[in-house]
Length: 293
Image (tube, rainbow, N blue to C red; front, side, top):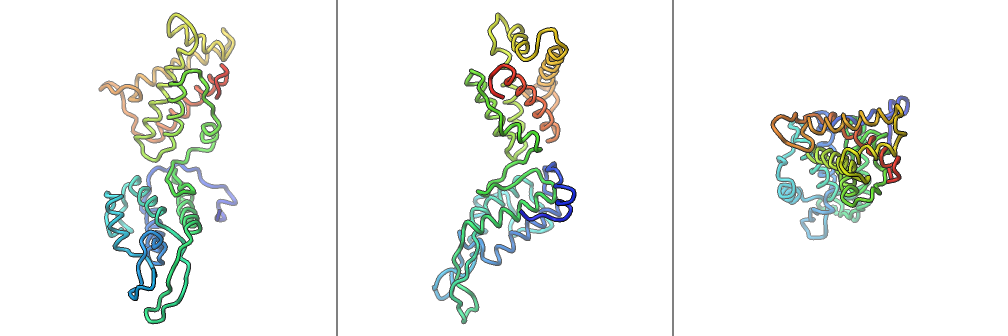
């Protein structure tokens, strides 16, 4: 991975920005235009030699037409100064990743002054992903392209490590399903998908309160926390207060319910904070009761 002095000396800036701004878009625009011009997208959209001797570049018209059908929200021609919405840019980058290859020059056609081309798919995709991710990283964008060219959200390192290693073995298939869905969806690019991840995590929290035997939910929830910390201890009391506060948050904000009296979460940072807080609590309970974590 290519780095600059500031990254080597001070470390990479945390991926905390959710929106692609004018500066970053201009860089991405240039990456795409360069690959149109050098024929990299000819792997999927080959431009043919007028003599019919094989491909010699990228058929930009075919590229544009298929792009318009697969990513209908994009405006063509692209403009370095008119920034599409971030999810649309991510779709555009995935489209480009599917089409890119490293041009390999073959025979030189002296009359038209061009080379006939073939393409190295693996090398072209690897370089495209690396170039995009470097721009993302240098601009602290909370997204990356995977090695397969798919966009995904980048979480802060502590949360990413926790989520990546968590195991869900609650003994209840629906609770496990909700937790796994929350883990997967918090990594997705669209804000509504991360909102859904938060909802599923809160749903799992409510189901966890009934995992222990007991005549009602309150007694079951207390029994659950009693297995995590000794009854009567200061930490057990703190767990009880945290569980009550998380329940109140779920009822006060538009997480599980969507009534007019509930406040909407409008910031990606707020969603990420609440997800991190709840996931830490859930993981502690899972580990403390022998249900994974």
